Amino acid sequence: MTPAEPRNAAHGGGRVVVFVYGLLALAATARALAQIATRFAEAPLAYSLSLFSGLVYILATVALARSSRGWRTVAWLAISVELVGVLAVGALSLAVPEDFPDETVWSQFGAGYGYVPLVLPVVGLVLLWRTRARSPERGSG
Amino acid sequence: MLVLTWIVVALCLALGAWAAVRALRDQAVILRQLFAAGAVEAVLLVQLLVLGVLQARGAQVDDGVTLWGYAISMLLILPAAAVVSFLERTRWSSVVLLIAALTTAFLQYRVLVLWSA
Image: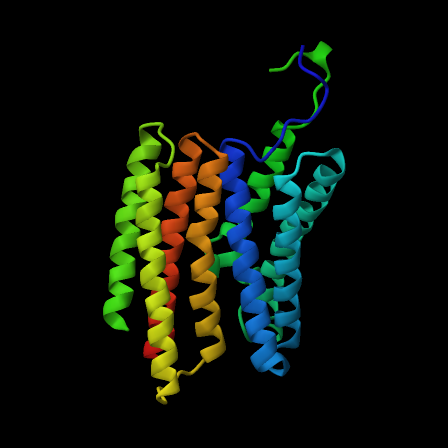
């Protein structure tokens, strides 16, 4: 009988998703730190957003790699924030480009990163959904 | 500098192709691939050294902090894939190695652009 526990999202193909999250976390955080260290005054909004997105990616990476219920909740939240972030910042960066003189991970819907920032949260949410706890009576399809 | 970049890119693409073949055959990463990744890391370290020497000798770079950020970040990616290949003994470790190799090659390209700027 399948227990009603969630399965670990970080297995098999899920491992690939966690790895790509780790890459994005590294890319966004490192870039934001470099930008803030060298030229924060040029684009404070864009660089603060860069750092924020980097921290959210770190959180999502850690949360996805763990399987407890608490961490899964964190993963749901972090990944939802990412999806909202990339959609909002993507739209804003096109609507008011003067507020975004330099790129962030989320600018233009993540075009600078091959749209990975746009696709990844969707993949992450699907992964969480597919590994969610299911009650045994409904079967383990 | 330029030669080293192309060596890394060539090695990474070869390693990526190897990983892709194994992923398609439903095979996990093997130790020989990790040795190859180690060779890439060795070239990356040499590159870091060369970068440091060239800058110490007064080579001008527009955005040194970002350049070093790339150079150091790059060192972390293949080892992370190596950790995954120990944890995940399925074809998915090969997919992770493929992504890691391609990312490293891409970052080399970015370093090259920054360096020539």
